[in-house]
Image (tube, rainbow, N blue to C red):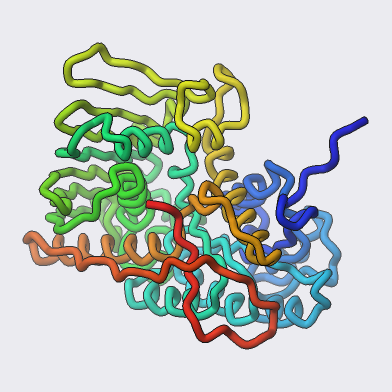
Length: 423
């Protein structure tokens, strides 16, 4: 007898979703779709894939969607889907657009009663992020932000090692994200991704820090469990003529006294996707590199260094659960991205079913991470402008209650019910 087809475990079927953005040739939209499809728990049934209705319909044809559910715009899509009977309409939306549209599109679908998975960053300003967070908390709906590097099994193992005290008291955090793809003025050659990421009207007030520095902030915060107290930043546009920075060095002071440094560059010629995180405590350190994601180096102070590898039984439960293949079979970027979708989808499924999500399912970046990320970016920009240390305002606490879905098109509940991954 063959195994039953995969399904959302709370619903006994696939979770229906739509996508905004991710039209023909869009890199990140394709990544979202592959990640959602990997475990067979999500089903794409609708979309508004491009600002061009013709290109949106073209993408719908390529994906085999019902033409009636391929829309010319996101507002039309939200209204039309909310008007469908509950057994047909989407239950969540994936937002895979340039940064300046994230907030507006997410609010539109939240207001229509749909859960949201949004590409990072959450918004282009702290004010926008806080406004969107208010909509999320009032709606009681699930909001996931695809900072996918927290989805890697060995990033989860690193987090476990810090939380379990293997490093002792954390003293130093060193993180770098070095890319070389913008080492030349690629944006002037018609390269779409380069053009919008360096355009303040589309990317927001920051390029390198907002794009990849925000990943450093999210990953370091996730693994080390420390909040940043203050920053001293130096930003530069090393390729002449750019309106936004392509390189940054940031000194950090963490709550509790730890120190740190972030190195961020998109003009490091020869680098590909050089994300690396090192954390040092008084009892040892650890070192993880995204380009070698299946390995984590553990460096005890008074013992030999160890290389821990993904897929082995000696790892923590979160790391084992995040792996899909036996040891020695490499996993990487798409699987980590899929872990965000799997966990968010199961949390959404639990909300729809009126059930309680497993704490491990609630382990994904959310709106509080998004607000913290935008606060970090704006503080870095202020520090660079004023050439001084600038304090990072503390994050506001959020109610701990789990989210419960409301039907599309119905009134919001008056109480805030935020989904929060365990920290």
